[in-house]
Length: 168
Image 1: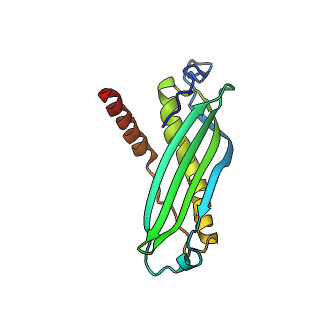
Image 2 (image 1 turned 30 degrees about the horizontal axis):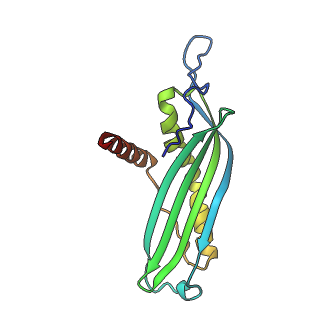
Image 3 (image 1 turned 90 degrees about the horizontal axis):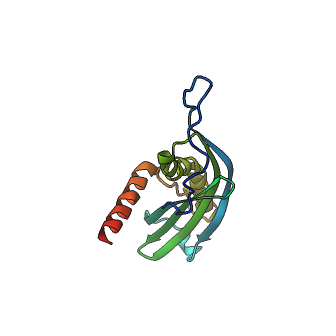
């Protein structure tokens, strides 16, 4: 969900070239980082036997906030819990962040850019971290998070906010 600290005026109004044509929108990735990471393997080594496919419970969250310097921090949080009838196999929580600079992005497109395009860029890196952790934790083959439709997830979250506001 978007953080309320995304500034309304952030200097990203569309600029124009010498002929007055708008310059294309631009998103720069200035940094990527693991903000928080946890891997639990509570029943190892017994859980390492893969007699059957585990049941997977997964959660995804996107957050963005503006900074005073005009940059944006975007976090992609992935939570994965795997279990079988004998109990939990592993649990992972990863908050993977990025520092982004936007230029020439219309005001109405800032939030969708931060909560769709930025997480879309961060996702392959977060996916690899989870795959490596599950493989290094003793699970073979590694667990690969399925691709995520961030646009649909964003629209779903916007709809839930609208419903909540309508009920208030």
